[in-house]
Image 1 (cartoon, rainbow, N blue to C red):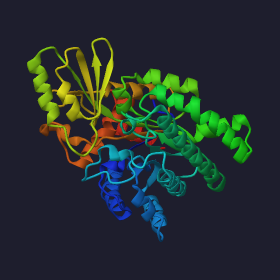
Image 2 (cartoon, rainbow, N blue to C red):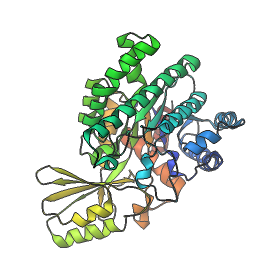
Image 3 (cartoon, rainbow, N blue to C red):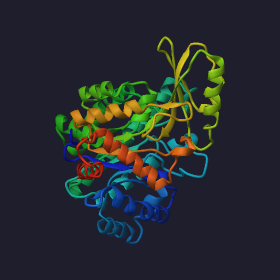
Image 4 (tube, rainbow, N blue to C red):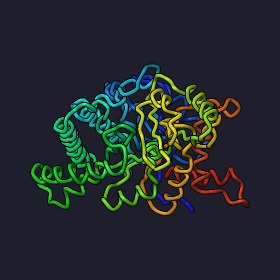
Length: 426
């Protein structure tokens, strides 16, 4: 079944190092034109842009934003989504829980997000809505020892700041005619990490407080205020992250739709998965394979499922490995954004089936307009199937297109890809 009009497919450029705008632009020039030529030669090709706080400040100096806009037009490229989750450095340094700093309790996060919205409003093609993915409010382990009052104050501060951005986005829409939403991205150990917590944010805090605020500040009717909040604060559904919560995609989307919560972006990504057999020697082999992946840059949370269905979370892979011989543990899911095209990783598996289910659901209903591949742990691949980065990106996008619209046997695969890209990049 063909994708409906309005769907856009890309990959997230957070895989390219670069914290200044100059560095980011160099990477975009190196990778995007050639990828477009290979994947979508006769149609515009979308970009999932990642801008750090520094890059977002840089691009607004002098005429750099206009220069970028001209370059996009010349190359047949366009920007429809921005990754506004990592504020600071994301490469060649220890990131770990710093990826959540500054969190949504801070003015810095508000200013950064509004700046990204200003940039996106300038770049976004007419008639298209834009999205900015962002952090899940804050990071739970920072508050393990905090009392209920402190935790409540964090939620209150985050809610107030989200609503401040909603008002900015409404003003931006009045000024430019562009609809831009922030897309909150639940993540393991984030203040929001599953559908229950997302829905509670809306029903307990965001909607009741936001409706009153918009009625008072903008003179909106209750229904108008409600719609404004739901339009400008949406969900970034990262398939890897929800797989770590052991939530089935169909059930999550049904819950969100019942609550009126929109999905601004789906990040197509897979987590590492492994079954834990009773045999101690086999578990030792699994531990060895995972130990080789335990690195110091990013958080690699592990969520363990026991034989009775209980879930146990570990804040990082190094901590989890100490418990791999736990008798009643039957499955581990580990926070790695592994390549989509294969299930096998040197004795480990992935949650690729969740990605396939999401793609199948997209054929049945318009869950979102924005699809973004987010794969950045290429090192887990066996040597015999590794490719250079441009080919790896191309392989991921082609896998998505093939999976979402299987080629007919009687048709040439290259012409099938061409037609699929026309749909995906409208």
